[in-house]
Length: 133
Image (cartoon, rainbow, N blue to C red):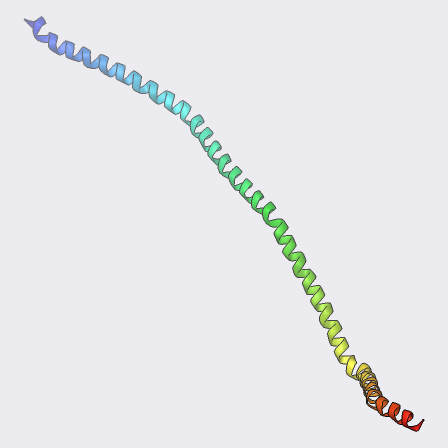
């Protein structure tokens, strides 16, 4: 009776022990495998993502830089060119208009008056000469 009465407990204990041993072995094996490969896997994943992000950022910046440099330089060149030309033009205009009344205007006015006088007197002079002859 003793043997048969203890058998269920013994089998149960044996089953539990084996079960726990197998489960613990599997569990520990998985843990060891996981923890030994995880750092490499995570490190590789991190580096891949990091490099992908950095490369994408780098390429985006390079493409942006190279695509905008010609426009930026062109705009800068035109702006400087226009500023220099406008400054030169304004300087010449100011110089011209500041000296024009003093030097050119009297000469121009005298010339205009002479031409005007000649135009108005020439027909009369011609008529006078032709009548006199």
